[in-house]
Length: 223
Image (cartoon, rainbow, N blue to C red):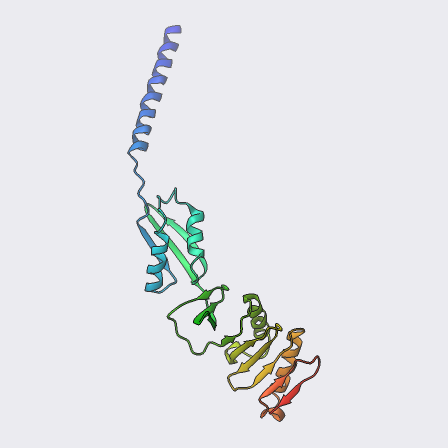
């Protein structure tokens, strides 16, 4: 009886040794390739090429060991990127779907023309769109998005804005494409803007070129 038990134990050890050896051989022989193919969707060819070069500036491991935070930081640092999703495709490919930022306005910074994107970043780009409004002055990005939100919620389409003038007093003047200028206060801007629009669409005042809404609850017209 004891001999049978000893034989069974020996057989079990033998099987464990054989199976373990096979597994070790398979694991050791498995060679994971480094990432050698990056597919980017959502940018044009030149923009794709530039981003791929940026990504390849740091060492790309295989898809299981890639440093995700480094990759994310590299993509987020690109001023054209609004949102993105990364897919790892075995054995050695990355698919990156990008939502490109929307250009909202132009601005002169340090004697260069930049585009302000919906991601809040300033972009130096060959893109040319003369329909985008120009920002004069030096507003903080948050100030621009505040005035744009007010415009978007009003009866005026943002596409009707020709220029935006920002003053050190933290207020805006808006010039429309029909050359009418709306002067806004630095407080209660939303109320003042909506009040000005009522005069803008009143045919009785259609010849006025300046609608001054800087004084609370008052509109001053200048033709």
